[in-house]
Length: 260
Picture 1: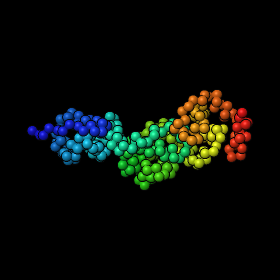
Picture 2 (picture 1 turned 90 degrees about the vertical axis):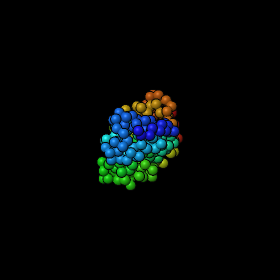
Picture 3 (picture 1 turned 180 degrees about the vertical axis):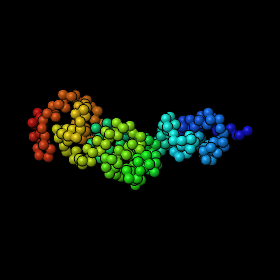
């Protein structure tokens, strides 16, 4: 009779929950670790370690243990366990709505957030899921996840987010944000008046987005979009957008006087 298995280590809860799920899978299969090792090509020691809760198995190990690419609850448990084990996600701010991202720095932080939330998959796996090296070279992926650079194009931005399994609707909105912030240098937001900021921000957005911006304090948009949550009302936005502004040509003080 084999030695009794040690209890799952729940020191990091998400890691323990993944281990418990893997143990349940093995129990349901009716196989011992040695029998499972023969079937998967992994060692019994590797399988036991994956189900111990003391470490997070690699995606490759998890795929072999599951008999195919993990999906559903197991995949989500792995992502949560990886994020908790790395401990970086807790230090990142949850991104605001894509329409409220106004600088390249904020977009870069949002991309890192989605990477960590997805369990920080290996760069090779990212490249494969993105569609290959022609869409997302490993070197580019490395610079994106370490916030050294943004994707080099909208297409690469979409490929990166798709590889992280971000929902398509959010991918499209972030791609639109990429177009907007890379076309408008981050420093150009500083020093703009509320009226100028409104014009720049809404110039490349849809009417639906513009209506949504009626709930935003425009002065906050220039400084910290993540904090721009104070409701101001649609009437306020309509009043601002009704005033034509020629950014870079009008004196800001004159713009305010005309708005008054």
